[in-house]
Image (tube, rainbow, N blue to C red; front, top):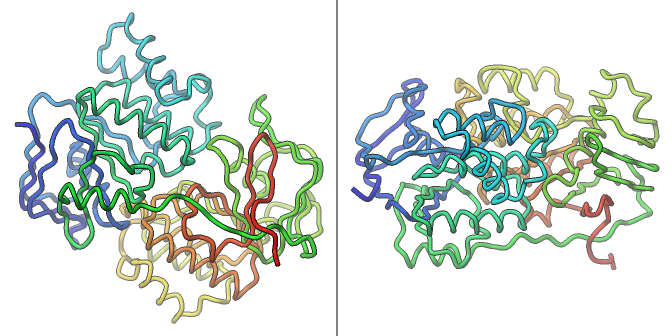
Amino acid sequence: MNAIEIHQLTFAYQKKQPVLSIDQLTIQLHRFTILHGPSGSGKSTLLKIIANFLPRHGGQLSGQLRMPKSQRVAMMFQDPGMQFALDTPRHEIEFALENLQVTSTDIAPRVDAALTQVGISDLADRRFATLSGGEQQRAALAVIIAMDADILLLDEPFASLDSHNRQLLIASLVQLQQAGKTIIIADHDLSGYRGLNADIVSFKDKVVRLSHDQAQFLLDQAPAQSIVTDLLDTHESPAVSLHHFRLKRADQLLIDQPELEFMRNRVTLITGESGSGKSSLLLSLAGLLDYEGSVTLFKWPLNSFKPRELGRKVGLTFQRASDQFLNVTVAEELALSRRQGKQTYFNNDRLNKWLKRLGLSKMDDRVVYSLSGGQQKKLQVLLMLMMGQPLLLMDEPFSGLDAQSAADIAALIRACQEHSGITVIMVSHQFTNLSSLVDYQLALANHQLTYQGRKQS
């Protein structure tokens, strides 16, 4: 048997409407297969079923899934932090290999080879807590590679990676596939796969494997990441100002910025390579990370605000959506933000309209942790916009979202920003079609933030 065979398969949580339904599907072994479709369409669920995590850990499964014998399976979750058991990439890989009963003399070479393949040899002994989201994704992939499984299941493995590192890892996975591995990736974003001889399983409307010509057409039409913004208008009033600002992570210098201003009532996008310090900058602006120099927030020193007062001024959407939730169900999260939120834009009619547009309108009783990664992200952004702080810091607000969902979230942010004049500073590796949302763009490279764009006429 040289394929994964699926017949009349359905899966549901809590005896509700099925989150996945497949009439018939064949996934060939030793191929590179991309599961592509909108957020919440069941891509991650299928990977977890193939990996035998579901229904073992919840839900009801019916139908038939036939797996080839003697095929070892390894899976990388959409949230890499969920699968780390130890403190550093090196220790994590060693632990995985010990559990596989790899001989002690073979462990060190396999650890080094896996770290080298994903380009994080220099991060081998760094604690996971100090790694960026993109660096954690590369570490999780190194674990999967070192395990030497036959079938590699990867759930949104590039969501927090810049385009350069995305291309490097895709090339590494292609090499593994050419060496006989089966690669199955759930990915909403087809950029970077152009020219790849890959199979595509579409999750749009119904789950179906596309023909070779259909797959190649989709890959060739995938847009490249690009954005066009204006250069900074220095006549505007700043919301945040940095003065002789230095930011470090352990002994590593991340940012050394003599002067910089983020303009009030504007949306500013920060781009740069994974691990360059973008998320750390947001944490420092939220008062959660120490820095050198001074930061001014709405003309007041940032360190002059007490924590509760700063919380009323500054909101922060975490890179990992599940870290934001304080309750169990969608309804409970919405009720909390309704009670505590100050955003006047969200009357009942508008809130219901956006819940419907975001595909969240019939999910009141769903446990937030049972939502797909994309659904969690959409709910997280909505909840934080409802809070209504005058400065909102957003770490990867489009991570794990398909193109339409990303466009909907961009429209939601712009609607709130225009209604209430909030200032938004966001970090994102996904910025295709964001020109209508973003006013200014900053690139972080060589420890400095520099405004990009064209001169205003």
